[in-house]
Image (cartoon, rainbow, N blue to C red):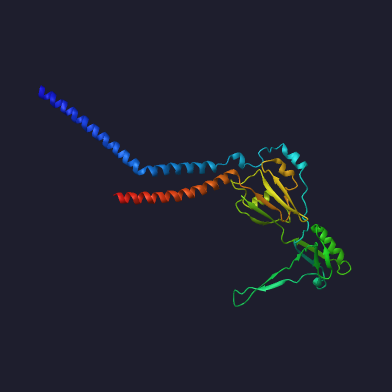
Length: 304
């Protein structure tokens, strides 16, 4: 019995000793892993933090993306009553105008038209030619130099007014002249947070702000719809107007209908600004992580 008791006590001590040794071994493994990987673990936390900043910074609420939030069917009557009249485009300095004069006698109108220009396209052995109409450029004094008729002041005139002016000048020289005119460079420029910024031609010299934004692919999720800037040149003086696309008042604004050479600027919102800052910080951190990882790998390789 004594022998059995002694053996039992020795067995218990042996088990206790083995348990302590195993615990110390496991603790040692955890300590060694943490010691070797604490930089990596710290960097992982930093990367997770940066990722969270990026995700939070790029969030845009549905409210900020909605056009005309308060618009209802009852508002239509009031908007139509105060809708600005559709403006007729007027001639401005540096405008390019294509003006043609026709009549029953083609020979009689030849001196009153600019000759078409033909240029060669050397793409084959038989060289084709392409014809292009010449145009009149409105000079700094607001005039165009018209064949035979001389200088004509056209700045500020509408398309119909220019046509009537030339027809009056041609009376007595050509029987029943027909004059046509169109703007060659009638365009608007859309810049900023849109999908396809650039220059867009005006349809018949007329375009609404919404049509211009639609042609540019609409405002991105990073664009401010409540602070769209319109820049307009009025007789050499720049005018600036900011419009809120979430408000119904845009329909009654005189800037709802764009004019030739207007510039539309969509500013970035806070999400875009935060995202750009976070991306810069992210790229900087990626460089740091890569350098730190290289050092850690080198140290571990040497220690082995």
